[in-house]
Amino acid sequence: MKFRTEVELPVSEVKIGVEDRLFSMGSCFASELSALLSKGQLQTLNNPFGTLFNPFSINQALKKLHKSEFYTEEDLIKYNDEIISLDHHSEFNSRFLHQTLDKINKKIEAGNQFLQSSKWVIITYGSSFIYEFLPKNKLVANCHKIPAKHFEKRLLTQNEISESITETIKVLKDICTPGVQLLFTVSPVRHTKDGLTENLLSKSKVITALHEVIPQFENCSYLPVYEIMIDDLRDYRFYKEDLIHPNSQAIHYIWEKFGAAYFGDETRAFVEENFKIAQALAHKPSDDKSPKHQEFMEKIEQRIAAQRSKVKHKIF
Image (cartoon, rainbow, N blue to C red):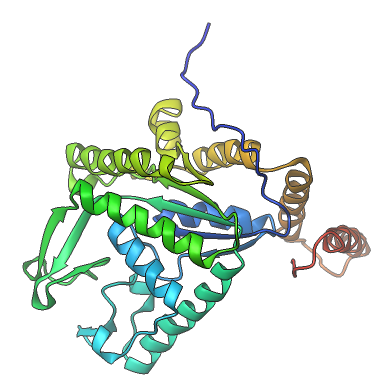
């Protein structure tokens, strides 16, 4: 007797290698997945513009990265004594123009260089809603808590979403290594502030566009992360206390499904051993000078050395 409907990720013929570079961009779920890949000591770069949600803004950011197009003073605004980019997450804000520009442009340079050698790109969309900043008639990625009277909120049209996804695929195929694998997901985080009905409509527009666009291109796949959360894990015990974000149990369940579909035996063993080493290193001894702890650390160093011998990039 079955008590749940399980969502399976199709097993990929192409596997993630221990030396592959993985670029991720999009919602906070993109950061969750990237953090686990990084913990497994794979080469990752996540969200050089900070957390982004809608397909239009993600596409605009990728086009900037593709051209390595730096920001200038004219691209920024000042609000509440902070210099802000409406294309970026608030983590880039500062009180000084040169600091904001420096943080933004360093990430653009790093993102451009990383993309050129990326074999995998994971894009996670969160919403179809977008805001227009009325003083500049500009579609923006983040409102930075500026009063709502300065913005007009709307849903992207189906054509705008499809065009953004299509452009994103073309840009990535142009800058990344030949045969780059593009994985698209929809965030399982529910945007309840938009309204539950509105959130479902917002995500459904993105899902529809992805299923229309992806089949037109090679090496592009859809990962049913949203479907796993709302169907396979359809219980509030898999959410954090806010009842919006997946909890660690849900994230690791999705991670296991991702690994089963995209990791070969070598990569899986490499990542699992690195997880165990990271857990051991996180242990806080009562006496770090004791012979027992010193022996423990020597064994950990031997395991790290064995892992380092398997890859060319720096780990731990």
